[in-house]
Image 1 (cartoon, rainbow, N blue to C red):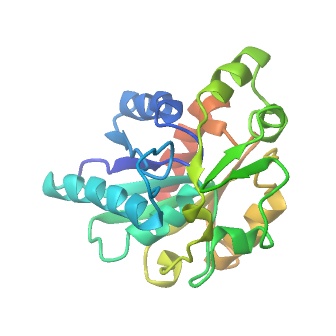
Image 2: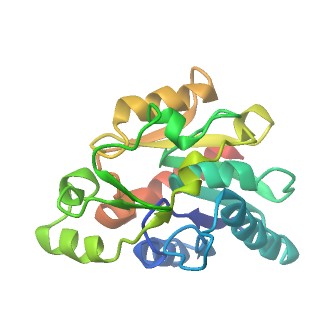
Length: 238
């Protein structure tokens, strides 16, 4: 039986290029892998895209895999957890979802609700766009990268549509029979470990999980360990 395709759902602010190295690493160990470009990230057409547009982009990727006879595992990072959760509704080729320091949003709630109703101090709202405060990002998102890597990936970040943060989720895959797992990132300063644990509690008392010692961007700092974690989880989701 062929391995499932790893469909990578980025978080806010980061372009697909940040995840392409990880996608290549998956391909090097025998998985097909794709990174889904999200319309809410870096978009310029007005009005800016929202959650529904991101969901449609992921569903198009899943449909493409289904047409090839491929099962898919969604690897959702950060805000990508909201997007992936809603995208799997009605899809019949999803073998599972892996939330990697990702938002698991209860139905009827939005990301802003999970943040207490207001953006975090390192988030900057400018009209219909949200960006990360540049001088805070090295310690918030890239705290285990070299100074050179922090600068490189900081420059690759862009804005995200504020609509993504304020739109309620409409689907809970973990409550609807979709196999789910969690990759905890213990040194994450953007989505702290205790918050990850609180959200993962929705998976039950003994969820399938792996804990990695990493910042929010493990796919940049320890991509090999992310690949190994996904391989481990994939074997247990079967």
